[in-house]
Image (cartoon, rainbow, N blue to C red):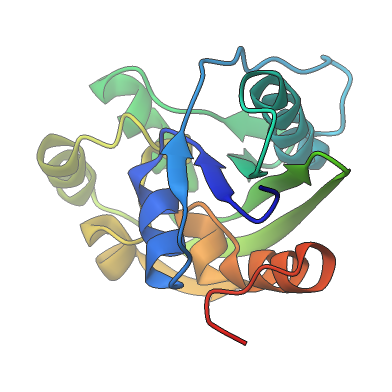
Amino acid sequence: MADHLILSSHSPRRKQILKDANYKFEVKSVEVEESFPVNMVKNEVAEFLAVQKNKCHQRVFNKGTIITADTTVLFGDEILGKPNNFNEAKSMLERLSGQTHQVVTGVCISNPTRIISFSSTTDVSFKMLSSKEIHFYIDTFKPFDKAGGYGIQEWIGMIGVTSIKGCYYNVVGLPIQELFKVLKDKFHIVPFNH
């Protein structure tokens, strides 16, 4: 059934956002290699990866409406991925400290008859973070599953982010306002009865 919603993601944050938006959905996921052409424009990578994930998941879950997403943190022309250890997270946060960066989330929605993708960009500015703040955050919150080495919804976001321009939920991992509009207008799926 095409209106059966499937979130194909390992992210607990995406699951929570969709749940908080009152959607009824199932979580399924498959492992997908996250690679992209080397010469690709960096702010297009998230949407490209979301589409690649969706195509892979369509082969496994060939019915229902599938949502996939990918979030990248851009600092200049560099993508800051998920840190593998304390030192990588520390290096990322030191670079983001006192600076503005972009968070881009690509989303792809498909059912057996159509596929639509889009991306959302949010500018995030950090205050100058002290070494103690960075160490405390990494030791306490272990942000190794988060692009850019931080979660805006966690302590470091509360004390360190001075401004955001764009969608907050995009930074968390799913631009719910845009997703709501696409699901409603293009797939006729709403989180409430008509």
